[in-house]
Image (cartoon, rainbow, N blue to C red; front, top):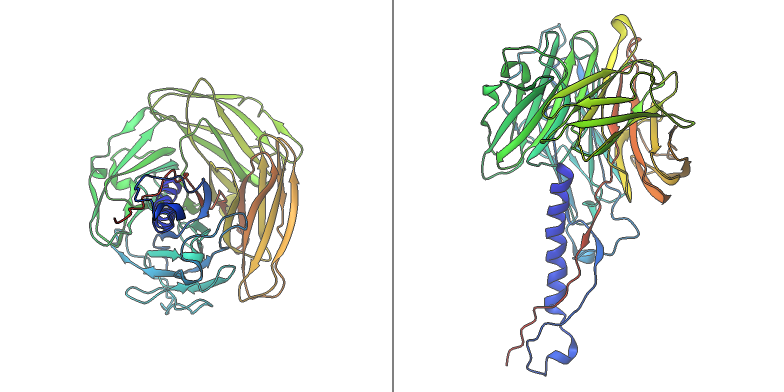
Length: 524
């Protein structure tokens, strides 16, 4: 998915840098020899990425909502070798508005006067045609901006030079009332050509929009949208050949793609030309709403962030490709892993979506769901988690999360209401969590040990000084792989409004293959 695109782009940049060094730095003995023979010059190394790009979809059409944008870059890890350019490398990181072609119904008027967006610490609030919303100036810094505009556009973020490694933009929207009221959180992601979203719906009472954002300025992207249910692919001819103009974002209401309303579907977004950013926003009339993150097909999946007070936990799983998937289910809690009674296994037929209700799986303990596919099968999986009861319910969506790896990054954390879920599905592991403040301040660091087969849920350290929110980095110190998710809880009038964001490896570095020979040409 998007992470692959970022890695390939970074590889190209890093290779260009290394190749340049190889060309100009010929071994000293070659100049006088008259020989153009290639010589070995350099071994493999991990290099910081030189450019990162992400897209943020239009946040909301509600007139009773406020969106906070937070941008942060931790810079290159200490273990990475210096990239090309040195102190002369460009230092830019801007978040720019794009054109949004709206297919949403007009927001209901409720007497609230529409106001201009508020200014934040990083620059102007978003407005169509405006300059940068946020501008980062140095690694380790954090900038924010807020807006209450119902027509806030999609945004394109890009960072170069020392600001590129770990560049992260978080978009958090608090919707006060109406369909989807609650907290909608999203870590803006890179563009790619394929995305999977298990758990979308076209049922009555639910509005799911997939936002397709084309970051390229030269050509339109053409996208196909496929829906898969319990009986296989759902007829959706209107989802074929969706055009996304250059530097534009198009939201598509999924219920308009099919005449057969259905819950618990899997959406596959494929760009047949160009590339897009893709994100799904789900809004429910009774159960609130949130952004529904994408998941990648894999033989095993870790889904962290299940809260201790969850009143409903629904697993949605899809088997891509030609093989069925026979899944083993485990719940990793604070003291160990158990098999949910009555839900030890789940069979998912090829090309179909299966669901299972896991209410009570947490038993009052926060944790993670662990899935393992047998016999070479693969699965795309997600969780729909509900907190609260009656008219005070709120929903969040938990994707399968890749390991933190060297370092993961998440922005827009708050002194109150932030928690981290750290899962070690295999061997015991130690992780270092660091908090970085907005407006300066002193970073705070704490190291945790996550025992094998358990989930450790912690309130992360809070930086000293600074202003407002902060950013977190999670680094693997030793031991086995760790999977992480950040939960942000901001109650609204008795509603336990919350959102959960995955914290995978932030792809700050890329492994550059060994340069086996230089291409120096000696002029005779």
